[in-house]
Image 1 (cartoon, helix red, strand yellow):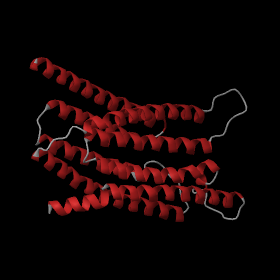
Image 2 (cartoon, one colour; image 1 turned 60 degrees about the horizontal axis):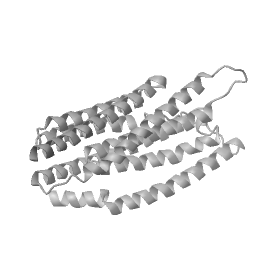
Image 3 (cartoon, helix red, strand yellow; image 1 turned 90 degrees about the vertical axis):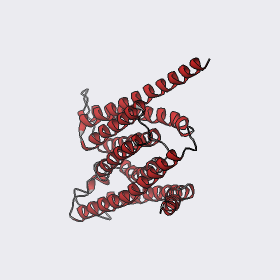
Image 4 (cartoon, one colour; image 1 turned 90 degrees about the horizontal axis):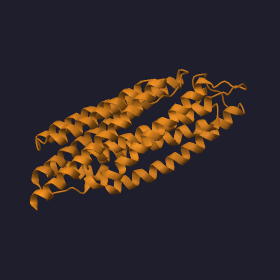
Length: 295
């Protein structure tokens, strides 16, 4: 049973599968961008007509960026699922990369809708764009910090049987998340397509990502509980709990709106970065302490 699951994992989440998905995603993103631009041209030249609810996606050529970014986000979610068996911090870093792209996509959408006044007053929409850009920089920095330190943890490997069992359990959870990902994506797309047919084609970051991050939090908690069966070290427990807390904050931010969501995104980034830096510093101090004791 375990060997068959490992085989399924390698087939769906292995390196060859990842390379194939990456190629398909890039091609789809390019085709999606061109298609969206053609739809915008057709709408602007009145070749086609759409409902008022769907027109928000065809008001500006900048709206065409929404489609390729959505496809890239779908690929990043796949990458996140692949990272789960590797290490907790690597997976958390992928979460921050996803919300970074979410914020960028929102910025492009808002820039396509913003209307400037001719006077010296600063429009409220422009203020929100500035705040969103600051949020993007915070999340981008957080993603880079995790990416720079994930390789260190990934190399911390042993041939311990318990560790192999733990990785095997995480692979099973990754497969469960992959199946859930497909179901939520199909359900979200179907609901959106129905809304478009009914004249409401508005898109928000809550579509798909709110439900997926809810499932992701449950998966993180399950991994935390399983890990406690292999190690009772409080440092790892507290660190992973902090990671989960930052994920919960990100999930709430996705469901929030306006300035509140940006504040929560920044809070999640600061929390995730702080937890990672403190745990790394403690790890270095612990190693130095062991070396001094050995001397």
